[in-house]
Image (cartoon, rainbow, N blue to C red; front, side, top):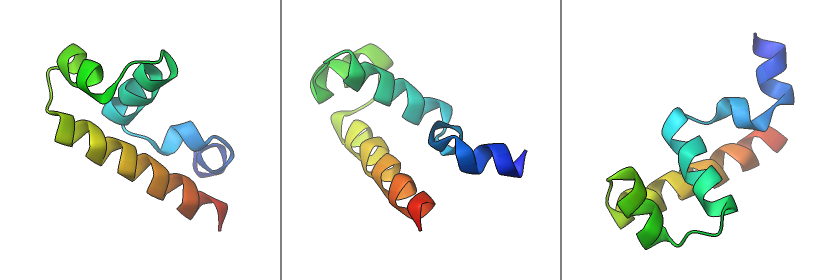
Length: 60
């Protein structure tokens, strides 16, 4: 399991972070993502921030 998680950066994301990422890929705004997932816009921003942090950490 550990080796595959290192090869696939998406495997490091939580389910919710993947949902936010998929919504972003569809071109939705943070406001639209928040409404679709029934979370606050601030929560969307936090998920995006954690995604970025994990991607940077995985490259080192």
